[in-house]
Image (cartoon, rainbow, N blue to C red; front, side, top):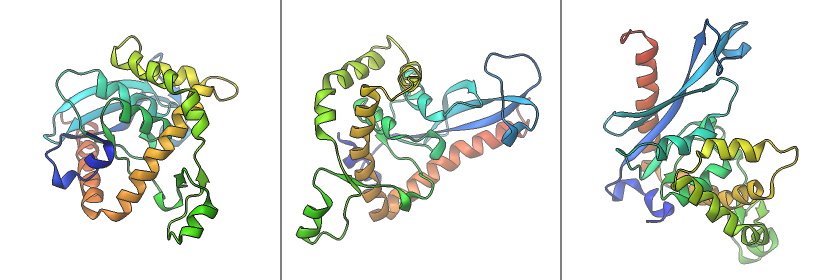
Length: 236
């Protein structure tokens, strides 16, 4: 089932999930611990990244550096479990990137992030602004998609996806490797370019579908409340 169909969650029986990070101070030496004045002041800490489904079952959790972007680990949680097959997954802005739109689409999961200041996001299309204006379209894309870039690296995108699905390497390791280059890797550019198409479809659906917005908010509240519950020390 295509992602654009799964975003209409109210008309379908879907498994929804969400993920969010919780910052935690670390008082001992740790490979993952890092400084973050915003969250820990002069101390070090980590991020505990947690996944939950619509039944409020916590099905995956991992510890990452507090300085790392959570988006790279979204696919890990969706792939590294044999219990929950998520049809639609929600994150906040920290878990969102355009490349993740591509990766989730390729593993057959609709990506439904709550993006901060979503109204300021750029929209993309295959036709130019002038073409849309001649048609009299009310919504005009900000930029034209680089179709040649996507087609040139399509086989690489498929190999990238196969590596993740066959679990030869984790998505977080692959994304970190691609983003570590001084200039953007061609494959990473292609992943983002295809993801911009999916992001544009999602944003247009998001603005048009009140129930989708409500579902995203409801699912994100579950993981945030779970993190708050753990932070309270009830389970210590």
